[in-house]
Image 1 (cartoon, rainbow, N blue to C red):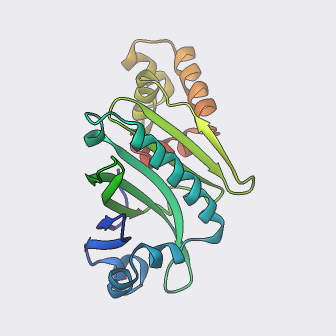
Image 2: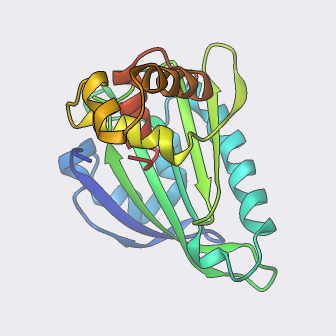
Length: 218
């Protein structure tokens, strides 16, 4: 997936302070690194777009409940992908993808230390929706938050066969070529596309590919 510059951090979820910060936030967002070291996650939250704060609350609840429900054997395979907007020091907003995994639990089995990677994906998504994918390495749970409606929609994850179609589309193959490569009919290729549009609430192949890349399924 071709994306822009990224920032890596390690966050203590009890103190909400960063234990590690990769130090290139000035290049990406314009804010000095000292703001994150001193202000912790609260400084980051203060720069969220106001319309995305509710999605942050919803997604945080979904993530926390999902992680706590996982058997101990599945927790090392947990990952989350979610996006939101942050204001840069110059006053412009960028859309950020945050990818999370857990480095440490507390005594009650809750998340304690989080490893995160944040990347600028402004060129991949519009500002009407945010998405969340959480996984234990076996299953995927997908959600869409609609900014205008202020509602969460559970989404259905495409099948591997459907994802194969969009992998080939993303590589530049035409529908007829995909049918030949996958040994299926052109009508079946079109059916797979329509099923994925419905599952992800997308309208065309470009939007779908960008979303699948964003949530780590392509």
